[in-house]
Image: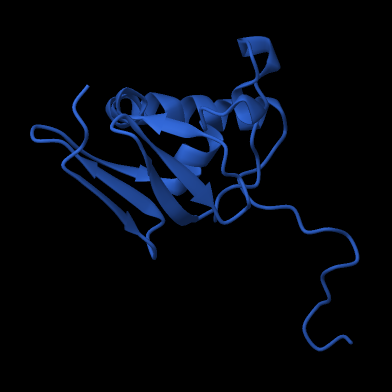
Length: 129
């Protein structure tokens, strides 16, 4: 598969813009993170796949080219082990709505949230010290 002609990260919108000559996709960092192609997220089979929750505000810290076939995305939550091949990015773009709906459904089934968890004892209401 041909490499994209342009890859741009929009930091404020947390969106990775990926453009080929005839296709263009804006992929949210959250979607890229929760569908990371890494073994840490995917496991080695569908049964081993781990639901990623609390990633609503995740951003991308760095993008590294991997040969002529992929990029490695380093997220601001420390995740950095997925290699995003061109065909994988294209599939995420083309089927983004379905992947997003599957993710939201899986969160609901597992009573999980897109919002990050706040550890007990780490938050103090305003004016209370």
